[in-house]
Length: 166
Image (cartoon, rainbow, N blue to C red; front, side):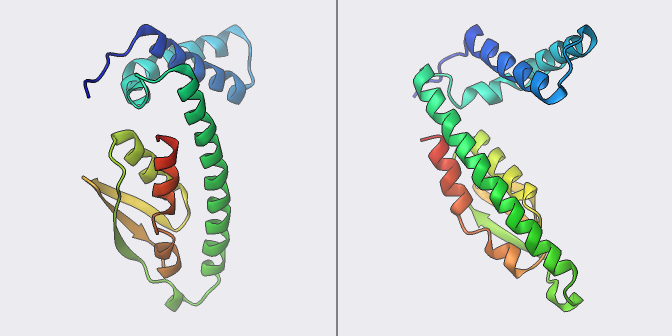
C-alpha cells in the first residue's frame, strides 16, 4: 500500500491537539505562556509530526475518533496497571533482598509500526518494576526487577495496543 503524503490539515490537527494539551496542563492563559506554548508545539509538530501523523494519515475523521477513544480507554487501563505495579514494587521494597531477582526478559511482539512499538516500549517503562532497554526488530529487551514484574509482560499490553490501531 502506497503511503499517502501528509497534508497540512494533518499537521494543523497535531499542532492543535498539542496546543490544547499545553493550555490544559499549564493552566496559564497570559501572552508569555501562550507564546511559549506556540513555539514549543510548533517545534514538536515540525520535529515529530510525521511520527504522530504516519499512523493514520490515510484515515478519515471518524476512524481517527475511534482510535482516539480506544487510546483513551488504553490510557485508563495502563493507569490501573501502573497502580498495581506500584503496589507490587512497594511490597517488594519491604521484602527480604532474596525476593529481588532482577533479570532481562526478551519479549517478541506482533506489533508492526514504529508508533505501536514506541507506545509498547514506553508503556512497559512507565510500569514500575520494568524498563524497556532496547528494541531489536520485533524483540524487546526488558529489564524486570523480579519474577512478578517479568510475568506481567504477557502480551496483554500488545493486544490492547494492536486494538487501538485496528
